[in-house]
Image (cartoon, rainbow, N blue to C red; front, side, top):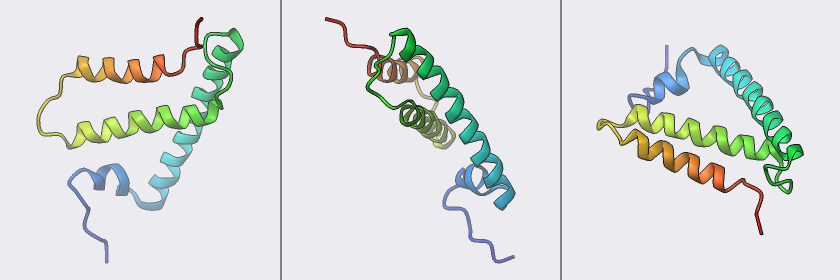
Length: 103
């Protein structure tokens, strides 16, 4: 039906499966996750464990985008990565980059 071929073997299932209704479903899920993560970040900011000079919804987008891209990369890789190293790297970058600065 005039469909364009997928750009790669994984982009079709991740981006194009189901058309518009799928896109709305994924978009709704992403908005709910952003609200959930932003809310949790606000709680931590109020408790003094996370920096207060950062906008929680923007940080949520960064976190969700990072995990989404890592998921896509995993789906595309042919060789099994070092999951411990990847997990440690993600957590170190996200966690230490968000902690309140200590004197």
